Structures are given as C-alpha cells and as structure tokens.
Length: 112
Image 1 (cartoon, rainbow, N blue to C red):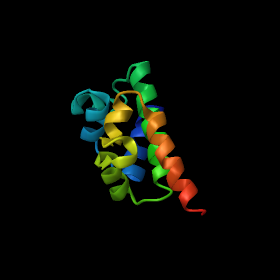
Image 2: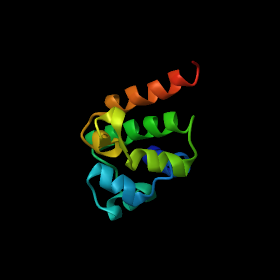
Image 3: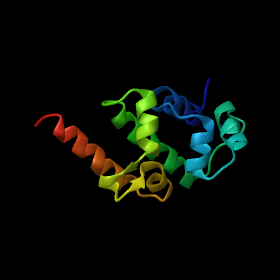
Image 4: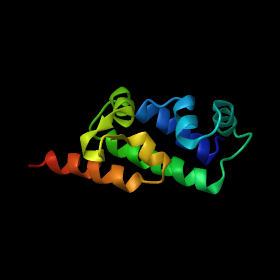
C-alpha cells in the first residue's frame, strides 16, 4: 500500500501535471529525494509535508478550472494578481494563502 505522501505526489502528477523535479524545486530538495518519498523509502520533514499538502490543495482548486498541463503552466507563470510573481515561488516561500486568494477570485468570476 502506498504511503500518504506517495499518494499526494501521485495526485500532484495526475491533477497538476507536476513531475518529481517540479516538486523537488518547490520543496528545495533533490529529485532523488522525491523519488524516495514516492517509493516510501523516506518521508519529508513536517515543514515540507505542510508545503506539499498546501501545493496539493492549490492544485486541486486549479483542477476545477484547468487541465493538468494548464495547471502546471499556471503555477509557473508570472501573474499580475500575484504582483508579477510565480505561484510556485510563493508556495515555496510559505505564501500559499496569497495564491489561494487569486484562485478564489477565479472561482468568483465564474459565477458573475
């Protein structure tokens, strides 16, 4: 049975088009470390687990609007509503709530 972390990483790939190298870059670890997490041979530190779970929540919200490939592009693109910053950089810096506010604006605009 896959670990909870491995399931999170699978969901990031399936819903967000994110590869192990993407997660490694966002979490500031090596791709080999992410591979060990995926195989259950190692587990991220609690702070990194929080970052990954925030990323998963953001990816799940974006999946309501975009395909996995579009979600990945959205995360890597600079956004005017994020002050010209990239969502992945803000998530890395612990500012997932800033990204979620922009996503909530996407949600609200679909109903107006």
